[in-house]
Image (cartoon, rainbow, N blue to C red):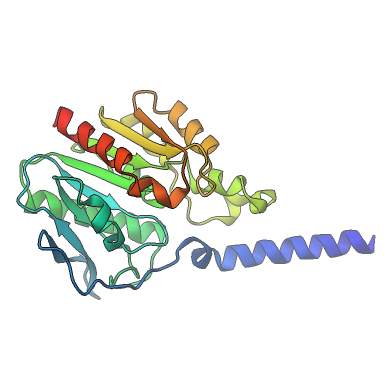
Length: 257
């Protein structure tokens, strides 16, 4: 009986801690700022909120390039500038945003703030690059942001390690014993938008991914049967550093926009 009481108390205590501190477990804000940038990269500032003013800071690569504009949403632990070297393989224009609290952007991250800011950023991109196709690209956490930020005017999606929702991802971990649907405020539930995705979707994932388990991405793919799929067998954070993967995405971009 004593052991049972101890287990119940411990279970409730851990569940409470998960609920209270979940944002710090999800978002690992990267404050790094790049002092020197390549000549084809410029810094941007976009006001995402007024009264009080909040500014999102990021980068534009290859502003003068032709073709689609890629809007990139990063994962939960990286300043978007970390991908500048990798994305040099793309000839397209790339707008790289930073979530609140990341890379010098004002504020603190949350699901509602990230999705609200993404709409402001996409509106800015459409004004800055009128009449050009818009492709949303998301890595890991950012794949959910890209999906939930898409609309009827989105021309394509590039999804790297996508998932159905963060609840599904968390259920595959040790905390899956908790009622995560009730505990988790941050869900990024992609399923709410899957019936209205653009026709052109490409998915890159790793069969050995431990962060977003491959089985979770495979369950996601069952809901998006029209997606072009690229498989790899590397660690989660190595997917966008692989030349073959980036070349495949570049070929996809050149084939239909």
